[in-house]
Picture 1 (cartoon, rainbow, N blue to C red):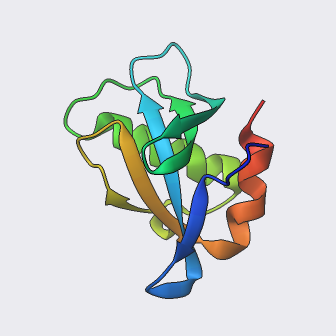
Picture 2: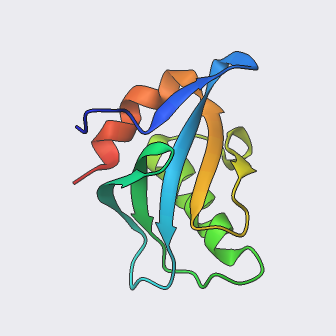
Length: 104
């Protein structure tokens, strides 16, 4: 586990966390590749098999994360970074502890 968590509480909603994710599109397989330090703090590093065009990589990321955490896709919201590799996703706070289990 890194020194700082890749998520923080959502100041607008105590039942939600904001997860920082660094996405690397065009991988052979969608999977978590650990943590990465960013300007905003620690981020979950995820390699996605989709190309970074027309939102395909974002959809792949949200689908993979939902499946991996056992959440419906509709409970994960892309808040920041639709066209950036660094993203912020809103998801239920109860699932924050499961994020560490995604890291190999």
